[in-house]
Each structure stands twice: as C-alpha cells, then as structure tokens.
Image (tube, rainbow, N blue to C red; front, side):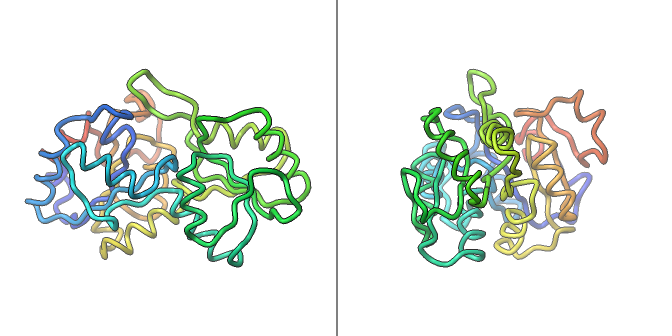
Length: 263
C-alpha cells in the first residue's frame, strides 16, 4: 500500500496499458481497485499515451470492466495532441495523419482538417500507432515532411503490451520516418509535460500531493519525475525489475501490480 511510504498523497495519475489491462484482458479486479481508491477519498485521473481510442471509447471499455467513469476522468495523447495543435495552428489547418480512425476523429474535433492524400494544403504530419499502416502511408508522410511540413508524434512508446506479448508501438513508426527524412518529431505524450500538466489541472492537486502510477520507466516515470510528481512503477507491463536496478533516479515505489499498490 503506497500510503505507508507516501501518506500525503491526495491524487493519483494512473496509466492504462500495462497497468489496468493488456488489451482486452484486465490486470486484477479493476472494480475492487477503484472502489478502494474511492473509499480512500483519493482523486484520480487515467492518463495514457495510447492514441488508438477516443475518450468515449475508453469510457466504454472501462465500463465493461466494471469501472464506470465520467469523461473528465480520462485523458490520452490524442486529446493532448489536439490541444497542442489548437494552441499552435489556426482552425482548419491541414493534417496528414498516420493513426487509427479515432485519432483522426479526435483531431477533427479540435478544428483540424485531415486529408487522406498529399496536398499543398497540408501543414502538419501527425504520426501514431496505425494498425493499417502501409508503405504508401509512410511514403506520403515522408514526402510531405521532406517538403517542409511540421512533424508531430502522439507518443514515443516503441511497444504496446498485449496478451500475446509486446507489439510495435507509435515510436516504431515515428522512428522509421525520422530515419527516412532526417527530421525529428515533436512528441506530445509522456515523458513530455503536457499530459501531466492536464492531469494536475483536472485533479486540482499539487505535484507533491500526487502519485503517478505507470509501467514504463522511460515515459511514465521519467515524465512524472520531471514534473515533480511522486512515482510508482508496476511490473505488470513494459519495464522489468532488472531495468529498475539500473535506472536513476529510481521510482519511489515498485510493485508487482496496481492491486499491490492500492488494495
């Protein structure tokens, strides 16, 4: 139980993939876990780098696991990318998107115009995890980037945990285009600060009153540490105990899973 080490915590920022589930398989009794969090009087928000679902789709998935939540309890890198684009570019800016249909829907909701083929109107190439990735998509994105378009990646996770094992993540596709074009992507998700800033604002807690729980050292933990947020790593996802031994500064708490941290 994290309270033994961090009794001043008032809010939790909880990652999803590798913490709550492996794709369609929940990790532990999620209903019991969130019931305990509520009984402790803790504020919480779920914050994931995964941009393959809309917030509504995440709410629906959580409900199927017995965790009914309101819209404001979930944020992801797709939403953060939309907020970033809206702050930097005018309404109607042309985008070329490598990603799931949910990412396109999210970005259009922030006033962006998404094009399916190359066009002089396109100003930004946005790259994320795309289960229908093709050479033609990579080719189009590469040529647009070489022509001067800005390059944005939703998140840099190289892998995504599933019940079958780790599959290629957004960072794999972003890396391919960085190699092909010599151009570095602007990464929006963890370990960059925007997701954590959004989470703290919604929670209404200070960094020193907040615990970030994640499964990946280089994103969840590194980002939280940079933001001054307390950290707990669960070993149910990407990072392994051997990696923790060589990681500095280490997470303040390491647990097998979320159940061990909360129940």
